[in-house]
Structure formats: C-alpha cells, structure tokens
Length: 376
Image (tube, helix red, strand yellow):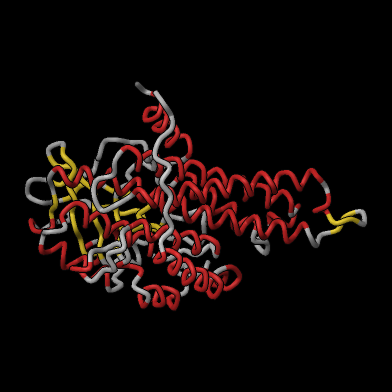
C-alpha cells in the first residue's frame, strides 16, 4: 500500500484576516497580561471573551441560518494558533466544539437551532464526555434511562463553570445519545473543581445522577455516533493548532534568553549544544504548522473521510510532541530559573503536559494512524 496521500494545503483570505485579528488579541491579552488572571475564578480576562464575542468567533463555524459566520471549523485553526502564542485560555474551544457537535448531530431540530443561536451570540457551552480520564475508552458509562433520567458522572468538563449549556454524551440501549442541558440544571453540590496542570484552563467533575432531560432535549440516531467521532478529531486538530502557536512562542522566549544570558564571559546562545536543539525545534514547529493547515484544508461540514482523519491525527501527534519538547528545553536552558513561577518556561511546559493528554496523546493517535496507514 502506498503511503502517499492527500497533500492539499490551502490558506484563505478569511483565515489570514482571522490570524491577524487573533494575533492582536494575543498581544493585548496574552503573555504577562494574562498572569494576573491565572489565579482568578474564570482564569481569563472577561474583556478578552467580550472581544471574541464581538468579533463573532463563537459562531465562526456555525451556519448563517443560526447567526453564525458559516466559515467552517477549518477557519478556527489560525485563531487557535495565534491564541496559543499568548497561552490564553477562554471558553472558545469548549463552545466551538459543543456547537460543532450539535450542528453535526441534529441541526434541524428546533431546540438545537435555538441553542445554536445562543452559542453564536456568545453564550458559552461545553461537552461532557470524558468519564475515566482515558480518551481511548470506547464504552460510554453515563446512561440515559427510557424515562429520560441521567445516571453517571463526567470528568474534566472544560469551562463547565462558565458554560450556559452542556451537551452530555450518554448511552441508551447500547447506542450513543446526547442530552442537552442548561447548566443551572446541575446543582453546585454536583460540581467539583478539577485542578489542571495548565493554570489558564478550568474544568469540573460533574455528577449527573437523577437529572431529568426533556424528550425534546434528547438527540439520538446514526448522526450522533458520526458526530461524536468527527468532533473528537476536530478537537484534536484545534488543540494541535493551539499547541503549535504555544511551541513557537516558547522557542522565541528561549532564543531571546540565549541571546542575552552570559556565562564565562560568553553568550550561552553561542554554544552549539544549545543552538542545535533550537534548530531541531524550529523544524518540528514548522512541520506542525504544515500539518494543522493541511488538516484545516480537508475538514468540512460533512462526515470526515479517511484523509481528514489521518490529517487530524498527524497534526495532534506532531504538535503535541513539538510543544512538549519546546517546554522541556525552555526549562532546561533557563536553568534553575526555569522552574520558578516568575519564568514563562514552566507555563509552556504546563501547557504542553495538558495538551498531550487532552483528546488523546501522541501514542493514542499514532496507534490509530498505524491502522489507517499500514493495514491492508
């Protein structure tokens, strides 16, 4: 079997404009400006989220019929690459994925259209789907009874505290179903904050036992299974884009330090033992960037095909490794200072550790790539 596949790579005018706008927000709100918010309840500046809503980003991939921009999920890739440079965390990732899941699973259902309009206008949302902190698990334990009552719990629900809507992934009679819940239906007693290694992120554990879901808020059918598969791939792609931006910023931070720090009367950046890893990182980051935009060129509103799946998985595997290596080198090259709170090197490493596990780590995606590329 030939390993040469689709090598399509497009970068549209719309993507270029979005990249420029996202870079401006990253400069204005990221880096040192984001530090004071890391220990706050939301973890981000509310003014940043207001700017994103004003720019229409929560509805970037949603259809124009529900108030979205209709640009498709691929248009969000440059946005997340730029936001990754500033190590920014907002409900944008969780909201876009929740909207994409609803749009792919049941766009013609009236209640879904109503919720999508809210999401497009800036109401945050999130998907509750992880149960055992293992993205390789295939079975869904959370159950929706025939009477419409949920039982089970969910782990690491991104931005659950900020969300106004939750899309709960459950099963009924062995088939996946989606339960659409307003977040005020989940009482405070059923929520527990989940401390993440990346301090710019917020997540909760949710106990869903006994929560009733109205029949019109229950989504089922073949489209649900397909949508779940595709959105997990799209989530990996958007996180890969973010990781690529973070890795590039991490390398810039490290090189700037190497150009100013002197030891034994010489700039430490003059030593080949430090130059060569930086060059290797640059090559790895450029590879990540090529892969995320290749994947962005292949994903569309319909069901993702084999080539799109391969592209998303390759992007996540490469970008995750690139950021982990960049964060590790940043801490090493900054010396003892790299471990301190005052140095951004440890922030990049924290982001890398979180990115690695979320939506499947490198091993997870390469195992599936092996089957896609090598099986006859």
